[in-house]
Image (cartoon, rainbow, N blue to C red):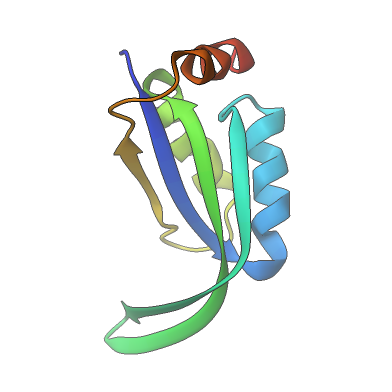
Length: 104
């Protein structure tokens, strides 16, 4: 599987850095930006919920995506964590090569 993804993961504010470190240490992503706090409004079990969360922005290869999902779900405190990918349709070739090198 070729290609690259930007993966968005939300987490409790106090778990964002921990999950980012876990992703990098396990070579599931080459880089994780942690946006410390975002306001989230969402449906959960029939109710509208409002929370403060951290947003992780992960750059990874398509070949690592399934493993990233599996491992993050094991570590994540949510029952149904948000883990969604957006394909990278273009980018600096040097940066994309760096992603590959970082995930070896």
